[in-house]
Amino acid sequence: MQAVFKGASAALMFLLELGVYGAIGYWGFTFSSNWWLKILLGVGGPVLFAVVWGLLGSPKASIPLHGLGRAALEIVWFGGGIIAAAAAGLVTTSVVFAALFVVNAILRIVWNQV
Image (tube, one colour):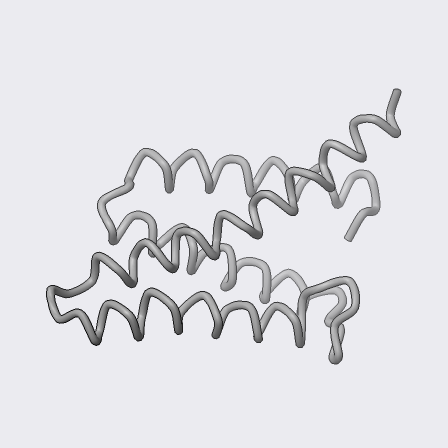
C-alpha cells in the first residue's frame, strides 16, 4: 500500500512541476497590455524555468543538486510559481499550490524520494 502512496507522491510532484510552468505562463500573459511583452514573458518565462529545471532539478539533470542545494532550488523554483500565480491574481490557487508543495516535500523526505 505504501508503494501506491509513493507513486501518488511522485505524480503530485510532476503535476506541481507542470503547475509552475502554467503559473509562470499565465502571469506572463497577464503582466502587461503590451502584446510583445506578453509574448516575451508568457512564453519566455516558462522556457527559462524549463531550462533551469532541466539543468538542475530534473531526474536526468546535467548538474544534479542534492541536499541543501536541491532544497534551495525547489523553494526558489516552486516559490516562483506560487508568487507568479499570486501576482496574476490567483491567490487561492497559489495558497493551495503552496500547501500541496509543502505536504509533498515532507512526504518525499519521509519516504526518501528526494
